[in-house]
Structure formats: C-alpha cells, structure tokens
Image (cartoon, rainbow, N blue to C red; front, side, top):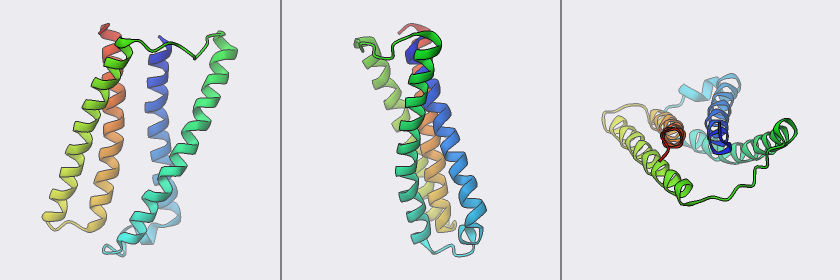
Length: 148
C-alpha cells in the first residue's frame, strides 16, 4: 500500500472515529437537549461549532502520531512529491465528495419542508458531511488502485 493510500485510509478512519466519539459524548452528556427542545437551534449550532476545532486538533494529533509510527516502523519518509496524477485523483475525489455533501444538504432541506423537527436538519447535514468524507476517501482509493 502506497503512502497516499495509507493517508487516505487514515483520514477516513479518523473522520469516523472523531464523529462517533463526539456523537457518543453528546448523547451521554446532553441527552435531554438532543431531543427535548426541537426548536432550540442554538444547542445544535454550538455543538457543530465545537466539533470543528475538536476535529481539527484531533486530526493534527493523529497525523503526527501516524508520521512518527510510520517513520519508526518502516523508515519511510512522508514527504513525497505530489505529481499530476495525485492532483487529478484529489480533484476527482473532492468533486465526488461535494456531490455527496450537496445531496445531504438538499435532503436536510427536504426534511425541514416535510415538517421534520429542526434538529433533524443538523443531524442529516452531519451525516451527509461524514458520508462526503467517506466518498472522498473511497474515490481516492479507487483511483489509486485503478492506476489512474
């Protein structure tokens, strides 16, 4: 497995772990706020605003640990030159990811129009974002394996 594929798998895995851990944290500590006040958008907005820096810091720490473990275990350097193939794979992966996120966003708007609770909009957007990140990783892995 190439270093690009390893980083892609790491990004997908860390995204899922961070999201599930944060969702578990919210469900354990704020179980009443999750569903008791469906009109309270302030709670959901603050939950999302907290998730962003938590996710960034966690990913930085995960990538540092990955770089150290990879260097020690395989003596493989993570500084590689990105060529046109890598850039094309990245562009196609991001394109597919944006399509997936747009679909999740539209689905969240449809849920609001169909009189779902307002918190469902946030839940659908969060799941859509996670699915978009997964789509980006799977597309990148597909193109790296296919030999784009």
